[in-house]
Length: 301
Image (tube, rainbow, N blue to C red; front, side, top):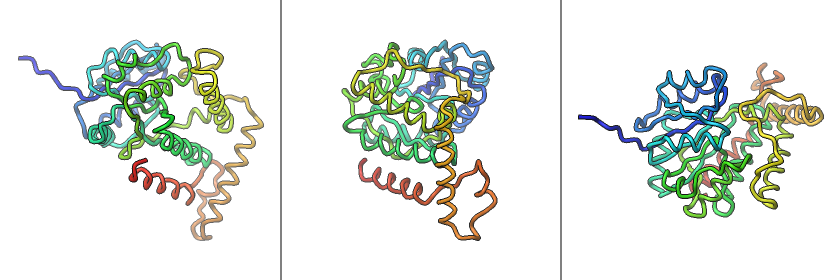
């Protein structure tokens, strides 16, 4: 007699040339305390070993495309009640799937995201993610949004709204959340967080990335979803030599932030690591922000 495994969660990962990052995510998934899930990698024709690596880890590989197209392709092949969409460059602890699934069940949440912490000690990276986490949490009731690298949604709701709009060429993740939230409340989960690469920041430069994000937000607010006019290079994270002045300003800001960090320490606490140009320490301000976010989360935000 055939035995069918019940799948509660389908983890869906769109990829293109992710042989460097994908194994780290798959290792995280391999160590999960929850085991009733499947992994689907929607690959957009990678020219490296991405698809082979996915298969070696026991993942199902389906043809993908741009992120929205790939996520839809993964969802079409999925068997789980919930779709957990991740980008290949995220990491999380071994309790993530179990904790997220349990919280969504207890809170009757059908669409959610969580806080994102940068895999970086660069001050601007920490400030940018701290602000983004706060912004998403404060707007979850009135202007819901979530980054594509972590979207958790019930399959029934996903198919009800038609999945990702493949005509939207940028911020298709935000568009999906906006439409889903019209039917079911969107929430930021308290029990989990993801660690995410800052390669997007390095590629464009942090300040240029901030400016680009504001442009996207302005366009979506006043002109509607983006179907043309913005370039998006899926899978290309080579650092650009553009925005030289902004990059120079960025270095100055980071240098100043490091200086203030060291000023907050006693002489015996400043180490050689603190003075290295490319090494940064967490500041008490970031720690306070993290503590505040957690306290607000417990109060219902």
